[in-house]
Amino acid sequence: MIESQRRAAYLQALGIDRWAARQPTAAPTGAPAVVPPSATNVGADVWSELKRCVAECTRCDLHRSRTQTVFGVGDPKAKWMVVGEAPGAEEDRQGEPFVGAAGQLLNAMLGAIELPRETVFIANILKCRPPENRDPRPEEIGECVSYLHQQIEQVAPRILLAFGRVAAQSLLGTEATLAKLRGTVHRFGPRHTPVIVTYHPAYLLRVPGDKRKAWEDLKLARQVFAELPAEA
Ligand code: SF4
Image (cartoon, rainbow, N blue to C red; front, side):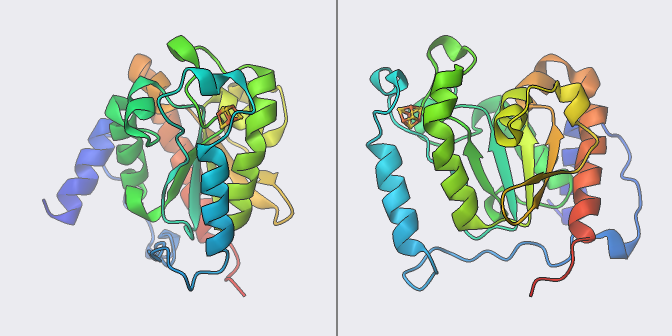
C-alpha cells in the first residue's frame, strides 16, 4: 500500500473521509527517529532496571491476578509518548499495551498524524490488568504511577498524548472531566512537556460519533509538536 493510500485508510478508520491539505510547515518536523535500544543509549541500565522492577512488582493486589505485567512498547527515545489506562485481557495475554481492536484504532489515530506505532513509546498508567476490566482504583494508581513517571523521565518525550479520562486525570493530577481537559495544552513534569488529552480508542469503538472530536485533538497535538522550539 502506498503512503497516501495508507493515510487515507487511517483517516477512514477515524471517520474522516477527506484528508485536509495542510501547509508543509505544519508537518511534524523531523518525524521521530527510531533509535534502537543499545548499550550506548544514555540510561540503558536504568531502563533495564525499571523493566525488571515492573516485572517483579507486587506493590498492589493486581499482581495476584495478572498473567504478566505490561511495561510498554516502542522507541525508548521517542519524541511522542502515548499514555493509556491499563491492560485489558488481550494486553495481559500478550504483554503489550493497545493490542486488539482498540490497538488497531490507536494505530490508525497515530497513522493519521503520520506517526507509525513503532516510532512512539506507548505505556499505561497501570502495568497490570484490573479484573473484569474495571476502572483502576486510586490506591492502585497511587502505587503504580511512579513507574510511568520514571518512564517519562527516561524517554523524555517532547509531547505526551493522554488517551482517556483515567490516563489524563492520573497524569495531570486532576479530577476534571475529559470534556474539560480536551482542547487545552497541559504541561507535565520538570520539562513542562506538553500534554494533549483525547478519547481512549476503546471508547471511540463504542461511540464512533466522537471520532471527529478525537481527530481535532490529534490535529492540535500535531500543531503543538510542529511549533515546539528546536531541540538544543
Ligand atoms: S499494577 Fe503496578 S503497582 Fe500494582 S502490582 Fe502491577 S506493576 Fe505493581
